[in-house]
Each structure stands twice: as structure tokens, then as C-alpha cells.
Amino acid sequence: MLVALASFAVWAFSGRLFDSEKAMYAGCAAVLLGFGGAALLPGSGLSGFKKVANWCLSFAVAFTIYAIVWSVAWFTFQDTFGEILGSAVGIFCLVIVLKYWMKFDFSIGSVTAVVFLCHSLGYYGGELAYDSIQGRGPLGMELRTGKQQIAMLAKLAWGLGYGLGFGAGMSCLLQMSRQSFDRPSRQI
Image 1 (cartoon, rainbow, N blue to C red):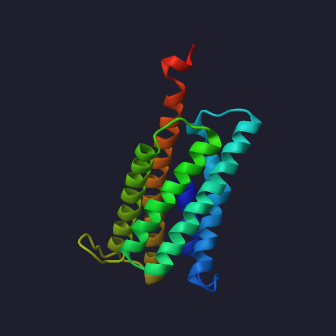
Image 2 (cartoon, helix red, strand yellow):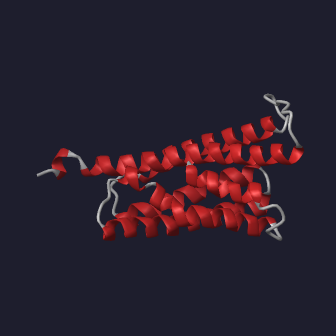
Image 3 (cartoon, rainbow, N blue to C red):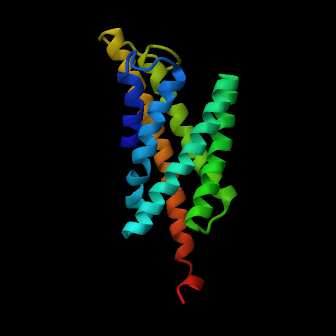
């Protein structure tokens, strides 16, 4: 969650640092690429330099593919359909890469569904918070502060929601992969 929050902070605090929306998305993705795998290590059950490095590299590759797929869908459709299509296909690709790279033993369909559900709840919950903080939508509120501070807080709230959802989904993926190694037939 903290890594996603840092990623969305790139958006919140970058101002005019990026010359395009695509460059800003790339900046946000770079934070998740660089630190996402390491942030998930406590739940992975992995230890030893080689296993940890392999996990971090596999996560970076898997997340890069997810980010590319999501971005292509978003910039093609620029609507909710594009977000959902990009998320579904991107998460499917992420799960496949992690399963085969890390030799995880879990159902691709089940894990993809869980990660997609958690990701979507976090993403759209974050979007609801983003709109609400800016006084829009059914939960719109009126904050007594400047527009710039409200915009920054709204972007960070979206990052918090996204991080909680994506982090929960990835934690479930890791838990399901660990359970596959704990089956009695594998303990002999």
C-alpha cells in the first residue's frame, strides 16, 4: 500500500514535471516497478538472496506487462471499459508470469479472479474517494482548504485505495502460492 501511495504521490506532487499524461503514468509505474516486489516480500515466505532477487525481478517483469496492457487499453478507449479491460487482461498476464516464473502451483483462473476483484475494489474505491474529496459524486464533501491541497489529497486518496486493493490481491496471490507448497502430499 505504501509503495502505491508513493506511486500516486508522483501524480499528486509532480505538478508540471511531466510533459504528458503518458510520461506521468510511466513515472508512477516506475515507483511500483522499483519497490513493489520488495514491499511484498514479507508475505511471500521467500528467503535467501537468490529467491528474493528472483521474486523482485519476476514482479518487475509481470508488473511492466500489466502496466503496458492497462495503458494501451486506457489510451485506446479512455473510459471505464478501457480501465476494466486493461485491468482484467493485465492482471491475467501478471498472474501467468508470476505463476510460471516462480513455479507457483495455483489455479490461474482463481488467482486472477481474486487479484482482479481486490484490485478493482481498491481502484474504484480510491476513485470514489478522489471524487468525494473534490466535492463530486454521491459522497461529495466540502473541505475548507485550497484547491491545490484538495487536488493533492484526492490523488493520494486514490493511491491509498489502489494500494490497499492491489496489495490485498497480491497478498492473496502469495498466500495461495504458499498454500500450494504446504499440501500434505508435498510434505513427504
